[in-house]
Image 1: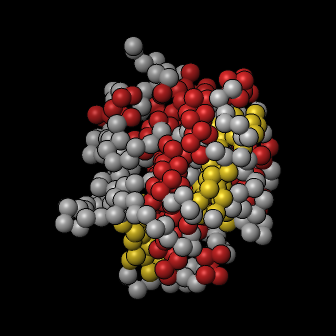
Image 2: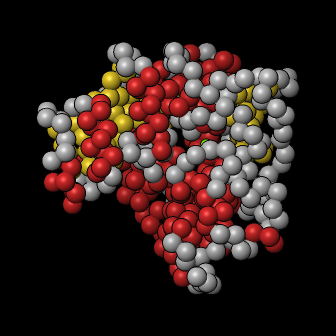
Length: 398
Ligand code: MG
């Protein structure tokens, strides 16, 4: 029996993780649930799973939740509550959205736990700090992001157990490159010019994956893929010249690795996040329950094409930040969260997102973060520059 702490339990990853755990109740037990503020759903989940502890970051709604928790469930509230439940389970699932996931990632790793990591921002923004925490004995990251989970699966087929345990110091050896697949998002095939007036509803209509609004917008700009390139660099220790992106609209091939002799290994399944979540729970074993198995007679044609780097400049902005290193990934991540927030609020146009991020990155002052405060400072600076650029953007007519 493996114990599981679900941090961000009311979001897209959290609710799907509950599906996985409920499919194998003899193998996994949820001992803690945590969310920012979704009191109703959190109470329902607690009634269903009977965890030992429930954490709510928004202390203002604590009384409302306390009244609805099953007897014997301890309630933790306030900003530190999510950190407190990230330290004592066999697997900590980090499904927190955005930069707020960093403290959860650090707490789980510093406690020597397995981190099933869906929160990509913590690794991207906090890279240098997370790498130190990752060397804690017992600590390991198993990626839940579908592309990185695919690469993890390919790598384990091609490397020794010791090499997998030593990630991100992957010995390059016969590995030539990582290839991340991208669905291309809802605007694939559109020209830069035709993207000037796209609406929020259009940007939120992802063709293959069902995800939260922030990551869905990131997917429409290809910033999601750009951030995933940085994430792959941090997770696997492969340099940027050896990480490529290919657009694959069907989202069946989740990513691949290529060897020096020209051979490629790929991982395929239907797009179903419960598979990577279950993989991270079960590793190095396999879940007994299939999620997203393929019916080969119905898969149909699989196609691959180059990303349009002119229409989707966010991809190269992320490569640029990744190559700059230091605090640049935190900087661009902060600027992106700010720009996407402004778009979701209707304050800027979709095409303003990359322009705002580019202007924030132009003003990057290089430094290397060695503490969470340094990461916060880079995030703050990136956001501040993006906020100023957003305020100067032409307003959307409503
Ligand atoms: Mg992904």
